[in-house]
Length: 394
Image (cartoon, rainbow, N blue to C red):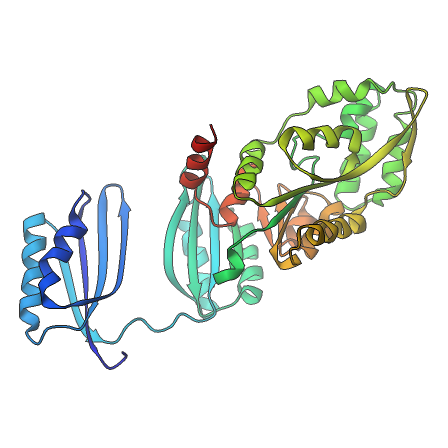
């Protein structure tokens, strides 16, 4: 194949139905083989690139037919005679870039890093245009281990979000997605909502913030915060559940993952009395959270059983994966605080969602945009596909 004469033709013009049919019909009687064909449409302008083999002895006839078809259609044509096909694309990775807005500065920075690491951008497609712009780049000639930290540093400096994942089968098939709850799946911190009913919200919020930054031991800080809840009636759970606000895109993310047949889990340093019903309302089966001790209808200010700390979160991810028969390479973890660090590290893809600086620095990927369904773009799904799934669901 590499020694065979081939012809590359690129056509550009206004997009309308029948272009490919006209092009292929013009050369159909010449016995020409189509080796490659790609098409992209940007704001009504289509570019079609075709690589042809098994060329006729009289190349002028083939080129005249292509030129005549393009002239009738009002298209620009570029022809290049050469030898062989595209070389094999080795060491492929997928780079996903997200921005609101996504600027030329961001793309220049990304392409510069890719080039510096020996990579080549083979293909680009847009995954979303609103409320944020997402582009997916298929890159060859480099690997995740080298490209990911370099692009993460560039993204943090330049002001966009980026993800680097292996290409190929590793990106396909069923996965387990495990999420933190407070400040990830929901916009609130449940313990602060509970503490508000005890008049201790500001005190508890300060401790929570320090714990999520990793400045305090999580277990000790949890006991300290839970102690402020002593004496609250169990009816407070119903009131707090009514106050919970889902993160924008959370419902879309969960519903789409369910459409795909993906497994979903929640693991929280919060409380099962609130997290359990929330998971049930969203159709999420795998759930783990702390339990609050109740005596005679009132909270005692103590936690029952083992505290769900960062180590337990990582073990829970592994337990959920084992229950679903999935390897850790096929797991995705999403979280925002220091309590999520071990879970993010254990997962095949760890996503820091609007996270504290230490978490952003440690995770595979950081999302600093307020839409949780952007996780779907990191998994390779486009906005159009998500919206189509939603329409079919309704």
